[in-house]
Image 1: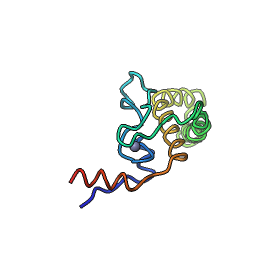
Image 2: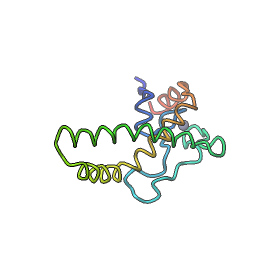
Image 3: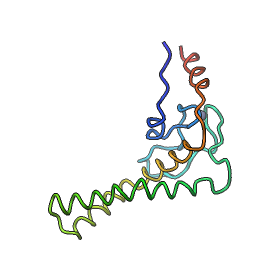
Image 4: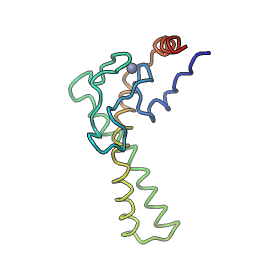
Length: 133
Ligand SMILES: [Zn+2]
């Protein structure tokens, strides 16, 4: 029985290589707090280049804005209108939550961006599953 490959969404959320969907994009875990922004230069499994050109991740900044701004807006609206917190208290809670989640949002934005630009290769996943059996 072969190991099932990650879906596109699972690969994005788990910060995996877009080409093989098995190796990690980043060197350390999200909450290691030492070098949280360091990515591997190439995939440790399939050798896909994670930095195909200079400035490749500028597009991820726009994705970060989209990924992060709407949840922040809804978070403040929920606290203010549904739970009845004042606007200052809502914004203060947003700052705390945003501070905690910033590194993961940064990483997911980069992961989405590289998954949009690099195709998945099913044969690599099949070959890895065969080696593990
Ligand atoms: Zn890979």
